[in-house]
Length: 400
Picture 1 (cartoon, helix red, strand yellow):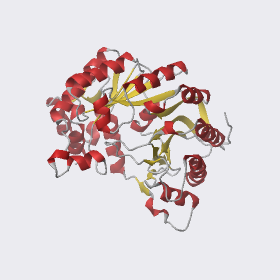
Picture 2 (picture 1 turned 45 degrees about the vertical axis):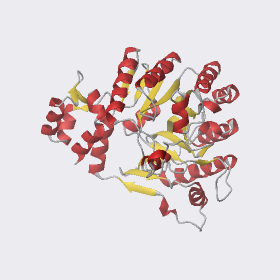
Picture 3 (picture 1 turned 180 degrees about the vertical axis):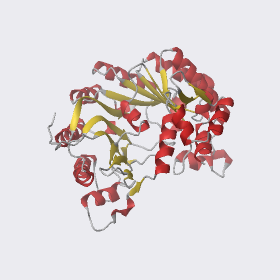
Picture 4 (picture 1 turned 135 degrees about the vertical axis):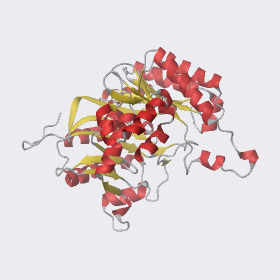
């Protein structure tokens, strides 16, 4: 690993998130920033993208004094990271290692779409030191996948998972979505059973949220009733979630965060760093960073969600003002709210004494009486399963 001088200063512990904005097609539920693989006003191609990311790394290192930071996790998300060539990852990981201290035990994750999970690509990633894959299954039902705008099928999921195992990956995560149109209780139960059959070490299951600027949002608000999709009720979505939690826990998974389950020791270290308010550097358009300055300030920064504007910012072209990047210095109230919100997302919860110092104890007691919170054996307060289902309302009441 690279060696860097630290001048006696405490080494910064950092995670890195790299956003890959390219996709073959946009899924109907997706609100993350992504574009068709060849759509760019400046004719930017995936092969050029690594150079932009490397330039951003150089700029950010200088701006926030990040040189020599200790990297504990790297996460390639998107978009569709698996659309990129292996050389892209090789080029970028080499550059990161040149500028930072990548821990020998660092968790390095790449998100994989099933249709692009070939053995050659996955074995190539494994040879570079990638040690964790996140496969976006979402469902195993062909009709549900088609309605969701996914371009893979059930066979592709099995092929990607099997190719990953053959390539030597033993830390594999599968993603599911709860509440997709057409997803009956029977279909969702089958999704869970097929997921369990693949024996992933980690499972993420997100309840469908219909966000603006998605195809589902447009369909949901379609004036022509014939063109409208029928979406699953909140009541049934909650029921599916409860079924999932019960089955996964029965099969040895730890429900360690509202939407995440893992075999012991295989919790996503990258995501845990988010929930523990650890520092992270986000690279690429729409990527967010959380950094602490030497004078104690905490900064949240989000890159502009536009590839061409992002490129202009990084290359400092005068045709575009960099103010389109968002940056804020957190207030003490912001810090407290984040500590509560992020801690309560996890099964560990937050120290009871600490929580009652930050929030009116009467509010916490009412949540406990309503069965939304529980006092754990370690003296922490955490959400119950019912509380996890109503987490947005709980956080809104606490932070009002």
